[in-house]
Length: 404
Image 1 (tube, one colour):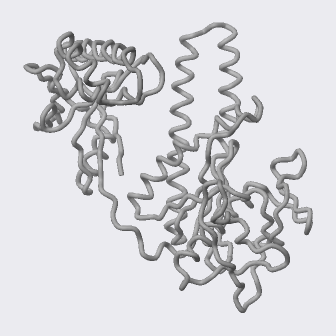
Image 2 (cartoon, rainbow, N blue to C red; image 1 turned 180 degrees about the horizontal axis):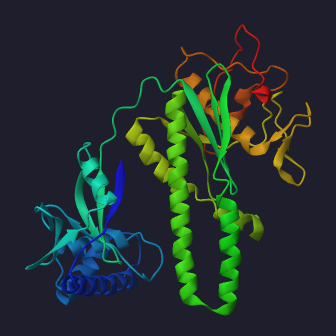
Image 3 (tube, rainbow, N blue to C red; image 1 turned 135 degrees about the vertical axis):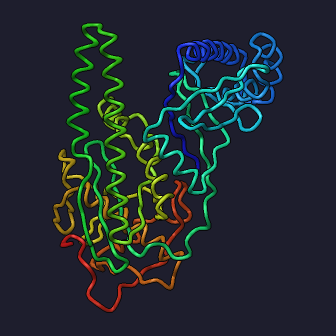
């Protein structure tokens, strides 16, 4: 498991000037290396550019090697900024005094610069992770002249028996829905996260359109930073609430394995691309790793089309109203997001039943299609879980998901 923490610096003007010159030279050399790239081979790129970069810049050998290695598979032909990495112990050292913690960067063979780190919550969190078996062997200098610490921790062995219940999450552009389900099919809790994200994103979009018409570039840049900070803060708060609910109900967390969409129209792509799914997944993985919570990803196959009342698989949404799901077989009308989160949790339970056959099976309605129809067969070309054997309802009455 990897993680990065940004550490703010308290360097003097003279040190900041040295860091600024080094960062500009590293960016210039990186763009030249990109211009020499012909394929994705880091060895060929290193052999072609190492001697020239070493002689013209005077950087440490490790800095030059990391530049060519990181740029071999990067996208694009021009960079506006780059984070330069320094490895411990050869090119970077750390030490502390009574009042400060320093990161010493070896920028040139005979020149090292000790950068003081500001005491704040990020530094406290950094030391807390180091005391929790995390290790840091690489530091980086960002384009904003801050220090970023790259931490690593080996993952422990997987749990033989995962958490009993499952918390399924359905991710949408307007809100995130969740459902907590037991292995017997009982719904313990349902709800929503992130209702405040969509109105704020609409506000930012309208404001951006106005500023673009006025050609206010400085205001656009400031607004972009505000929007990014708003999204990061709210995603972090949502992840915190999800982890608290999972620990309260003793549940593992399951999310969909989303993929990139094909051409579906400008309006759809605009909404789909505004979903911060990969940011949400990255933060959720880190928090689940810290708390010892199982995080599963299930295939999105039929999660929006399956009826939780009769088991039928239809077209899904009710005509043009994407907020509702209407089943054409039994007539059930429910919220589409909440039902999809329920389907994600059910699919995770089905996969668990296939891997752990001694566990309780999920009780389902036997009116039409078994719920294991949600899981793709092993002969399907699309990626997804293997086929799950037919599940037989228990002795008691099958649970009706539509009634909670």
